[in-house]
Image (tube, rainbow, N blue to C red):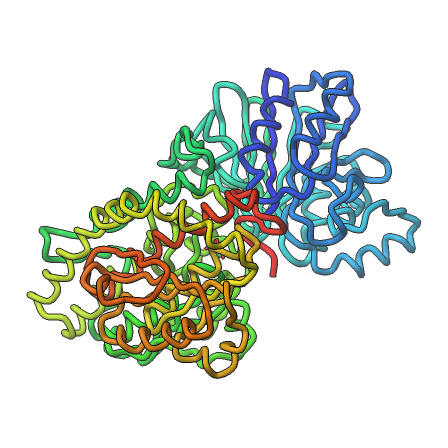
Length: 610
Ligand code: F6R
C-alpha cells in the first residue's frame, strides 16, 4: 500500500525514479510525486492521479538533472487524492522533504502541539506531521533528529528523506512497513518493494523495525533507533525482472493466471520426497506437540481468508482437529481463546497486511503456536512467525490475487496431509495416494486453463447484461464461491455475492429475477445432488445459471445455460481446479466492461493499514 522509491548514483535520478514508480504503481495509484536535491535546493513535483500525470508535469518543466531523489505513489488514507496531499511533503522551512508509507496514529495530537508552536500545515495528511517534527528536532545532525522523531511517532511508517544540508544522502527509517535498499553498478536504490529495483539488482538489505539507513552513492549504513551503528548482511532475492514484467500479456492478471501451474509446481514438488513423504523442514512441531493441539485457527484477509476457509474444511477433515477460519481484522478484536494448545496459521501473500500481522502478534503474545504461509521472503509476517512455509509464486503484481492464492491452497494441502500423517490419521498408502494426486495438480490446472480459456471469454458476455451475480456452493464449493465472487466484483465492479447454496432460500432468493446470473459450483461429490436442487430453485425464478462441475457429473446437469467442467480429482484438491475458470471469467468480464484490470479502483496491493 503506497510505494516508495529512491535513487542516488552518478546518473540523473528522474528516469530511475519514474521506472521504480511504474513498477510500484500497483501498490497505490491515487497520486504520485518525486523530490530531487539539485544545486543545494530540494525540488518537488507531484500530481493527483496516475504516474502519467506526474510525467506530464515533469515534461512541462526544466528537466531535473539531480543524481539523487525520492518518489512515491499513493493510496490515500488521510486526505483526498489531490496535488497538495500527494507525497513528497516538505517541512515549512523546506529543509526536509519526505515520502511515507503507513499511518501515523498520533498525528492529530502531534499536529495540534506543532500548530500551537506556529507550524502551518498545508495538507490533510498524517505524513506532514512527521516532516514538521523532523525539522523541529533538527539541530545539525539528521540521524539524531530522525531518531528523536521516530520515538515520538506512533503507528507504522517507512520513510525516505532528503535534507537540504546533506544533499548527497537519502535517509530512511521504518516501523512495521517494509523498506529495502540495494547496491548496483548504476547506483544505490531504496524501495518499499524489491520489484522497483529488480532491473538493477536482486541483492538487497532489509531495514528492520525501528532502524535507520543512510544511503550514499557508495555506501549504505544502518543504525538502530538510538543511533548506534549496525552491521547488516545483504540477501539474494530469487525473483528476476522478467517475473515482474508483463511478458507479452495484456495484463499482469492474465499472465499470473497462466503462471499458476508453475507456481503450484514450485511450491509443492520440492517438498515431496521420493513420492512418499512430505517434508516441511520449517515446521518443527513434534508428534507430541501436534497431539496437544486442540484447535487450529487460520487467520487472513480477503482472498487469503478464502484459502483459510478451504483450509478449515480440509484440515479438520484430514486431521480431525477442530479448525476455524477467521478474518484477521475481526479475530484481533474478538478476544479469541488462545493458549499453547492452539495452532494459528497465518496466510498472506505480501506478508505485510496490517491486520494479519497484528493477529499473528496477538497469537504469539498469548502463547499459541504460529505458522505462516507467505509469498514475500523476509516480510514482517515471515520474520515474526515461529515457522514459515513459503509459497513460490514469484512476484504478484496484479492487485487481484490469482497465482498466490493457488500457491497458498497448495500449501494448505501439504500441511493437512503432513499433520494428518504425523497424527496417524493418514496411513502410508493414504499419504502416497494423496501425494500422487498432489503431483498431478499442476498438470490438471494447466488442462483447465487450456479447456476454459476461450470458453470463459464467450461466457463473460452473460455478465454484460446484468448488474448482479450470485455465486453459490456447499462446503468446499461454497469457499470456492466466495473467492469467485470476490474476483468478479473487485475487478469488474459488478455486484456479486457468495452464498452457501442451501442458505439462499432464507432471504436472498427474493433478489433472484430473470437475467440475474447465478454461478453454481457443484464439484463436490458428496453434496452434488443437494446443490442441484438449489440450482433448480433459482432456475425456477428465471435466473441464468452457469454450473461448474467435474467431468463425471457434467452430463447430469440439465436445464442450465452453461456447464463448465474441470477434471475429476480428489475432493480436497478440487478448489484448485474450479477457481481457474472463475478467475478467467472475472478477467474477461472486467475486460469487456472496460475496467482497469490490474489496478481496480480504490484498491491497492499489500494493505498495510488497519
Ligand atoms: C483479492 C486480494 C486481497 C488479498 C488480501 C490479503 O484479490 O488480493 O483480498 O488477498 O488483501 O493480502 P495478503 O495476502 O497480502 O495478506
